[in-house]
Length: 126
Image (cartoon, rainbow, N blue to C red; front, side, top):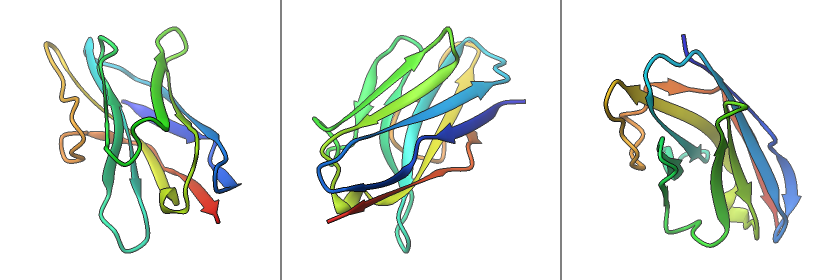
């Protein structure tokens, strides 16, 4: 069974930085795509950044140039480095994964991701 555990959230001032981590375990297939999503109160969950097994990445326009997604395969850990944070980045951030024997979905839509962490709160004050 896949388990995803996020950490690294917190409160920072506008312009600050945070690094989120997601420890993953319980893989079944070799094609694994992972992503970071966020949900602010009263808003829909949105994709922030994704990465596939080959290391290809996709970013939401709102975070391009500020956020960087990466993974350490040896540690089975996903990261999200967030720089130049803005108040509008305030949300609960979730790590998510989908996997398959031959391919996986690496887009920003949430529905295809089967496994989710419990979330970590990021609060950016102005």
